Image (cartoon, rainbow, N blue to C red; front, side, top):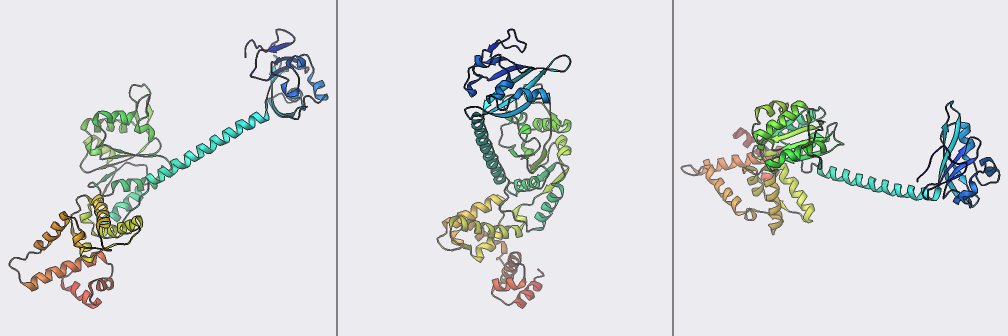
Amino acid sequence: MTNFYLYPNSKKEIIDSNDEDIIVTSHEGIILKASKISGRHYGLGAGDLLGKCVYDLEKEGIFSPAITPLVLQQKKKVIVVQTTPTNQKVLITGMPFFDEIGKVQFVISYSYEVSELLVIQEYLKELENEMLLAKEELLLLRKEQLATDGLVIESRSTIRAYETAQKVAPLDVSVVLYGEHGTGKTTLAKVIHNHSSRKEEAFIEVNCETIPKALFEKELLGNEQKPGLLTVAHNGTLYLKNIDKLSIYLQTKLATILREMKYTPINTDETRELDVRLISSAEHTLASDLYYLLHIVPIHLQPLRERKEDVSALLSFHLMQFSKKYNMTKKLSDGVFNFLLTIGWEGNHFELIHLIERLFVQSSSTVISFDDLPVEYQIESDAGLSKIGLEGRTLPSILESVEKKVLKNAQERYRTTTEMARYLGISQPSVVRKLKKYTI
């Protein structure tokens, strides 16, 4: 629209606009200006409206109702729906313009056909539905990301670790999780986030060991084109996995950010406030600066070789999971089950899952036996006999050693002496007597 001035430079003026339906009236109700398309809703041309009085047009049923009298009466913006002589619905907005003494001098109105607005409304509704769907998908992805399937808490050390996590989760403090690779540090980090006040916000996991050192600072801080991890995790939780693998320089850089609680994206002058819950994991000690900033609540997760109760429960759990996945039922023989309770599990949970799935898909029988074990595990099984110490011992002594080992494994697997008796094929009193004999 061009050459439009509120104060008329002529008594009757057609505004040079083919896009906007605009009418300007005086406080007497006389139409002073109209855009080229004004009047189309009423079956008139713009020139037919100029100089006419809106009160007369209202009496003739052309403006029904007229907007100008309502604006003059209320002295504020008014919105009404007009019904035109062609039975169209038109949305009219009228706005007052005041003179020096506060009197309404002009009324400017603009209109849209309701059908056009319905199209816009339908578009906005579709857009809103798409946004809602995207939001639901994002929420679903976040829930999947934060799922803690396979969570097993049986051993005393694991119970203590999760009790500590539950206590500190609602408190916005830094937590460091210590443990070997595969001991469940990421799962515990998700549990802490899920029970925190930030649980509805993002949980961003970063493996400090896999991001190249030269790129880590850029990934952390971001720049003008790409937001950094600290920005993406704003109001949420940032989980820095293997933080002890960072160089001393990057640990010191991170310590500075945490101490000042602010950061500046690369190649910008914008300083941003840091608002994240920081959880980190490590296998070894951190640099001194970072240690004192992060080491508010340390939680230690023991390796599986020290958590026999967890191993027993995990074996049963993952057998059940793979039974569902592959739609068949298999179980471990008692001998294999007991053997798996004794091995070192250097890869911890990852090794256990891998081995159970491997045994499940490769075993041709419903009962997984020693013959199904991979060669490296069979060698370890055979080596178990040498640990008993056969050399220079009598048969009764060797049998007692084996019996004690079997009883101890049964005790770790079953909770009651009745269950142990059923498993061992002896009476419950015999189990009690043998346990006392070996002071187990």
